[in-house]
Length: 250
Image (tube, rainbow, N blue to C red; front, top):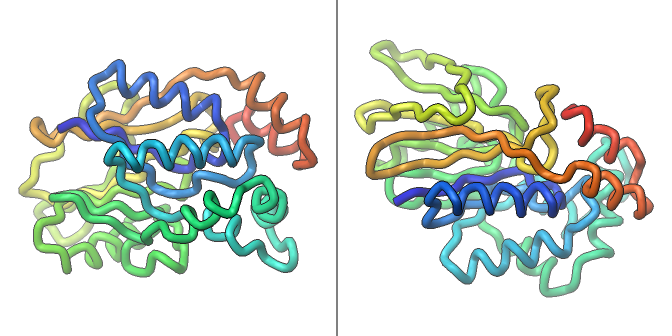
């Protein structure tokens, strides 16, 4: 089974469509969306519609913090992300908001545990930036005996951690397009990056492909129509900064 793992789409329809097409051309059989379908981007309704259709086809989904905020926007704007929540809320239908509200915080499928942030406290939206937090997340996954892989997003970077012979975790920076062996005798945690808003200085969309049969994980970067995605933002009342950062990958 080949799973396409997509996270942090952030209402970027152009990036989502490009990643889905790329995944299908590389043999993806099922999809998993790891949160933050919306927020920042111009097409929350269309992206949620895509997600709802994928769910009907057997895709797995978990909730992200921006999905949560789109259902119940904060009363004040403390962060850049907060500033798009109320606008996003108004763009969504009642059915779309209900879909987001009912998404689970975690989802287990065989050896995989899916979560947006850290598995030890999913609702705290803790960023898995380093070995310390990755350890907490992997330790929490140990309550699921079958789980060997924890997949998440939230940090907008592609990183792989694994537990070696010692108790500590090793951190690995993957090369896009190069399969990484992830044998089941070890525990693995991957942050799969952002489809719709990369922040590593490279504007290409991110996702990953997990081949369960071969125990291989491949991280991908995908070109998409950034100009169209940026132009769509500029036609809304969202801050122009959201369009600019797509071009910069920041």
